[in-house]
Length: 352
Image 1: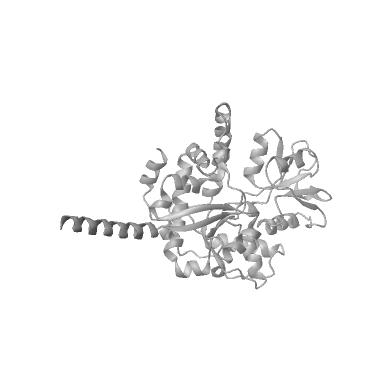
Image 2: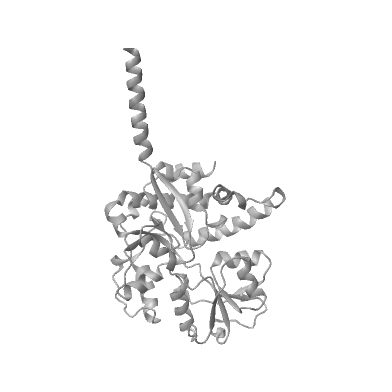
């Protein structure tokens, strides 16, 4: 009898063990650019157990630009993406809406800039007329806003300025330092990395209305939002907790990147410099993440901010219509759930 009872218990344990394991859902999280030590908040969140707490098993993938990323979420190859919103509006304006929606405002202010060499005679965006401008890729989601910014300064895209895709990192920076392009428009992290690497730069002034525009956010497929709202809420909550933890422990956030890419870990003699520079870049990232956020409403899209983005793109001619329905590309239904967690507990875990 005892043997039968033990066997029965073992069978039940095995059965329920399989059930518990299957409850963990695999998800793919896509970025429009390679994951970096200074954009590794979600990777830090995984290390701290935030995904595990929500029974999620993430895979981090990267593509080249928003124009590549959004279709992959639309065809469900990627579960959640972190694109720039501009492409969604342009598609909606053309009645070619993607079956996806933004549900978490990740970059609450714009990280995009125009930079030139410190000794360049170019001092304004208007001065870019007749010059060569380097961008990461023509598939980047911020291209419509770049066009808007330049048009406001009297510079027509691909007419008054030659636009060249240059990629990211040292290869892109060399094109600026060597004069192959006279200006770069990447994003703040890349420009700061270039400056830390020794290239002296100056940033061109950008109108305030563009600085305050929100940028990359989390998207999910319409079906995922409708059929698996709890999954979307879990992802939003993990994002909020991960960013909060990263801001509290910048160095820990940087070091967590090695769990994702062990080859990125520097040799012992270079580690201090690596950590110092990436902590500075991560702080910059967190400033962009939290710059326009309310501490009790992480991930929210304020109606005024949404209207501002549509107005700016409409007034510059990037959108034909200024009355686009926000409900067709943004949902705010997961904000409450995204913020339903213990701040003290997250800070305690982040400090370990």
